[in-house]
Image (tube, rainbow, N blue to C red):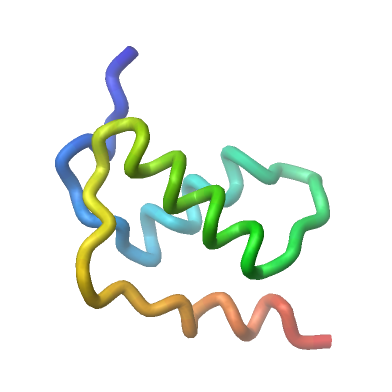
Length: 63
């Protein structure tokens, strides 16, 4: 199976796409989402990058 993000660093755009793929319609915590998306991306040949910040996730988790 080809992973379309293989060899690419995890960016906010890639993170969003994977988040929808992995959690579509499910409830999740911010930390759980970050951990699972990072693991999935790395396990399938993606690069995690050294400076990826997850601040972009704060807004969706505000009430």
